[in-house]
Length: 509
Image 1 (cartoon, helix red, strand yellow):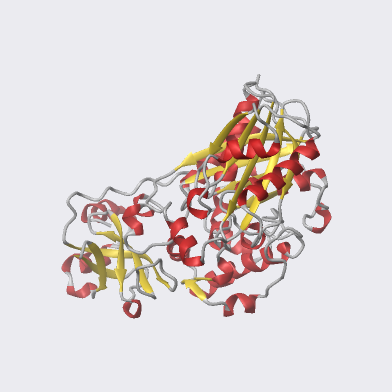
Image 2 (image 1 turned 60 degrees about the vertical axis):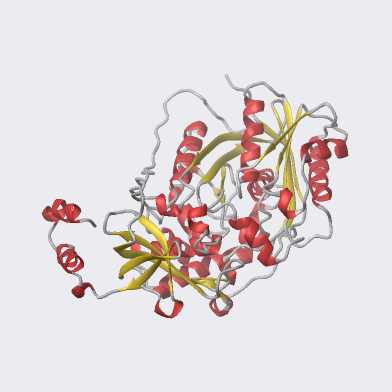
C-alpha cells in the first residue's frame, strides 16, 4: 500500500521581470512553503530548473539552495524535463514519498529568464526543438503556429473562426490574470486588442504567446500532514520532431499521461472541477482540453469560443490566468500550476471569484518541449474519500495517433508533396531572414518534413508542392496538380467512395 502524498505547504513568488537573482527567487518560495508547513527540516530537496547554465550561468544548484536554507544533510536532486520541469520535479518527489523512501520532501522549481535579451532567450528555448527542424529556422512559436493551422484544416475552421477561438482563450486568461496579484500581466484585454496585436508566427499574435518570465514556486510533500492529496500522476514522452508524428492536432504524450493519472486517481474527466492547462500558446489550451477528455476532438475551439472553459463554464480552465497571463518561467510553470490548484482547493485563494462552485478535484497539465514530455497531476482534498481498490470504470476515450513513416535515407533530392500547414514567422531565430516562410509537407511516399518557402509565395495547407534540396534544406514551391499526372489522378481518387480507399492508399495519400 503506497503512502499518501500530501501537500503540507505551497508558495510562489510574484512572476514577471524581477530584480532578484535566481537563487533569491528559489529561496524565497522555498522558505515560504516550509513556513506554511511548519517544518524546519525535510528528508530531501528536489529542485527543478530547465537551463540555469545558459540563462544565468549557474550550476550545482541543489547544494547551493540547501546551503542557503540550512538543509545540509538532506538528499539533493535536480530534475529537468524542458518546459514541464516544474511538474517533472514534483513527480520525482511524489514517488519518493509514496514509496516510503522519504517521509518529507521540499520541491522547488524556478527560472530566471529576463537576464538575456529576447533573441538570446528565444535561442535557448529553441534548443529543445529537434535539430532536424531547428536547422530550418523553426522556433517554438513557429511550430505552435503550424499546429494551429493544421488543427484548423483538420476540423474545417476558417481563419476568422480560428482567430476568434484563440482570442477567446487569450481574453479569458488575461481576465483571470487581472485577479491574480502574483501574475505578470494583471490587465484584461479585449478581442479587439487580440486582433490588433502584432503577429509572431501566423496565425499566432503577441497575445497568443506566453511571455519571458522570472519566478519560482515550491511545495512541501509529506506522508503525514497536509490538506491536499496528490491522487494521480501521469508522464509520457513523444517524438522530439513534430515531423515524426502522425497527428499535428493532438499530443499523444498528454493523452498517455492523462490515462495514467486518471487510472491512479480512479476518476474520470467529468469529475474534474477545474484545470490548469499549459497554454504557452493559446492553441495548446484548446488542444489540451481535448487531449484531457474534457471535450471531443475538434470541439475544443468551440468550447473556448462559447465560454465553456470560463469561470462559469462546465470546466473552468486556467483560473490563475495560465502561463499566458501569470507568466512562464519555464522551469517553474508546472509546479506553479500545482500551487495555484492547492490554494483554490484549500481556500487560500477565494474560489468564488474564479469558479462556479467549491472545487473537490483539480487537474494540472504541463508540456515539455513541443508537446513531447508531458505530465498530468490530479489533486483532491485529503478529506475526500478515495478507494485504491474496487470497481472503477474509465469513461473516456483518448486514442493515440500513429507515428509518421520514417524518411528514407538518403532522402531524394526532389519529390512531390502536399502541405499540411504553413506559417510566416515574423521573429525568426538569429541568423535567419525575417519574415521566414515555413511549411510542413507530407511527401508522395508518406514521410514528412519541414521546408522553407518565400513568404510572398507561401503555399497554404492542402496545396500541392514540389520540394527540392538547396544547400541541405528543402524548399517548397507550389505547383498546379493538373500539370502532374500523379497529383491529378490522386485528386480525382480523393473524391471516390469509401470502397476505393485501398487503391488510394496504394497510390499514396
